[in-house]
Length: 352
Ligand code: MG
Image 1 (cartoon, rainbow, N blue to C red):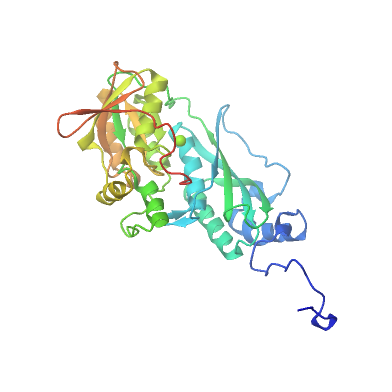
Image 2 (cartoon, protein in one colour):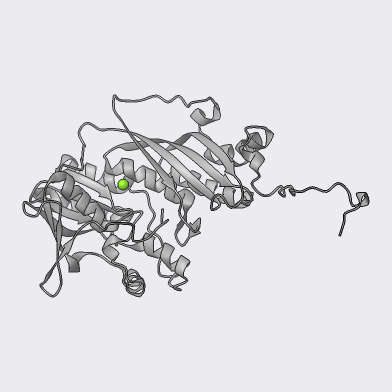
């Protein structure tokens, strides 16, 4: 069929309807300005961002800052218990928190796929804004690029966090000493299995909800109760509890003994792991921290953690030992032992 002139001019690339992301939204022109004005600034605005300079100017209260950066590519963009926006804020702020820093500022870089519904984008941006506000953090700089349809899965998000250091509270990755008690702030494996449950259609969605949470209050509780007795902390994200513990043990040149029955694994996580052949020790969390605490302060640290919602189910799961540096030994309920080491690769791709 040939189109006649009466049909109007032929357009080989149909224009995107106004409710979807278009390539022009990344052009730096009028569409970009409109996206900034209508979607980003109303939700993510802050005094430093609203000035719309080429760089945000912020005032440092002390001589030292902590800086961390993270990129989020999780699929699906929304999942039980959270979404990519929430995850980006929590993940970035948690890296600051477990370093002992007080989170102050965030920046966000968006890579949007042409055709992404603007309503979806706005929902995710609103979610980011809510999480940042809850943590008392200002989003001070950002950038948006748009790539052609099929070249990104809706959106990718890169966030950088800046926090200020407290000289009296400096947990470090290499700070674990033999005898330190290993605490975990809550049940493990929920984030990774919530994502997998949706992706694999396991039907556990009601029971498997991501644990994504800001760990700032849990860290503040530890700082307030035992301060410098916290020798090392890490959020147990990709690679799960096992990887976080082994990384700290390796950096500190100690071994770790863990009691398997003490490790909190929710029944739904255990069931889903069983079906997929996964080990919950390696499944990602987004709201769980591990801490090595000087033995005399371990009870006080545990009690303080249990006072905050993110740490209500905190427990003591192991101890640092001088033998087998860089390795963890799991004592099973049957009285046997199992060696825990880093996995060669990722058990679950695209979970954050
Ligand atoms: Mg981390």
